Image (cartoon, rainbow over all chains, first blue to last red; front, side, top):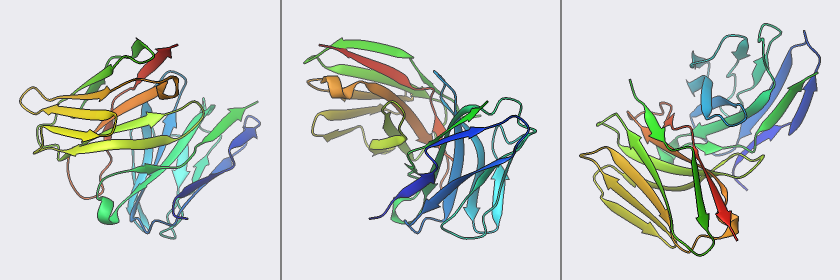
Length: 113
Length: 112
């Protein structure tokens, strides 16, 4: 069954802690993306990676970090430097026959207590 | 830079047609997309249209593209309560796995 998985679905974090959100895809896509969605808001791009071992900042990269050591995986770390991290985080991937078409995971809801 | 605009809300009665509109700015967009997001879920690709097409139909969904006016619309025929969701328009401004540019989404409410 091909697709994109994100874990966990819900995540709670205390202020001042770093936390890592997982994103895995088995679609053999070269590119992967992280977005943040706040209530009633659209999607804001955090980071994206077009190929393994390379990534670019999006519109709101401050307070976040990523790595792309494997084609299948693109974890996002929300650091303590992110002032307002409570949000819904979406991961997507694209590539292959689909071209630029992005396919999304189910999302992770992060709440800072 | 690229920008995609959508109205934020639309309310229709069950059984009526819904039309969700979108305008974009990049005339070199190759593909334009419609995604659906249900509460607490990720975005689901509904349909897309290549920029050299005027119309695409897929069951209850009809996409119209007016490239001259940079206007895209999604028509949902016989709208059902299960169609209640947020609908995002997106453009692909260049090729090569670059990020799509998304609108802020239109929240469709279907009244029974």
